[in-house]
Length: 162
Image (cartoon, rainbow, N blue to C red; front, side, top):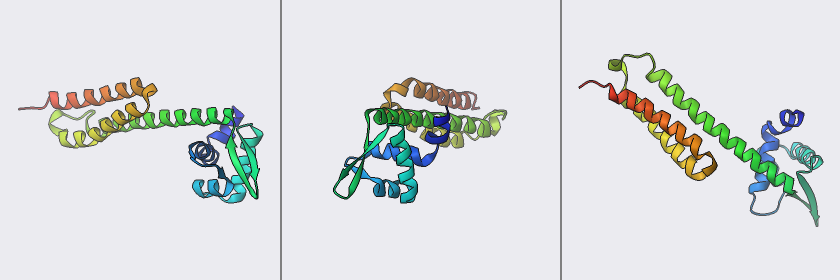
């Protein structure tokens, strides 16, 4: 657990690993530093830690040291991407509940601003639909959140007066 707390939940190491994975061309520390918004020295220190963990290795080509992911580095980057997707999904769920808390829960139907609720939930539903297409493995979780949006929307409009 120590490695997770001290390395991967920090922004720069995670971004560095994900950048190397997503890079279409061979990359090196200076480019990574610019991409993650860190100094060269800090980036090199992070990359050295990643190398110590067996996630990247350096390959010298002339004066340039390329940073290359190992197989374990690729798997780790993919796991971090999945972790990030889960966090994003959780974030959307929290936003749905905040809309419900702020605009619906505990209010008499006559005081619920149905247009405001709809305006706030519609983009979240679209975001979840895109998310489900992009991440098939999270389709079920996305569907549950879409169902929650529909429950809130139905509750708001079902009891609306004539």
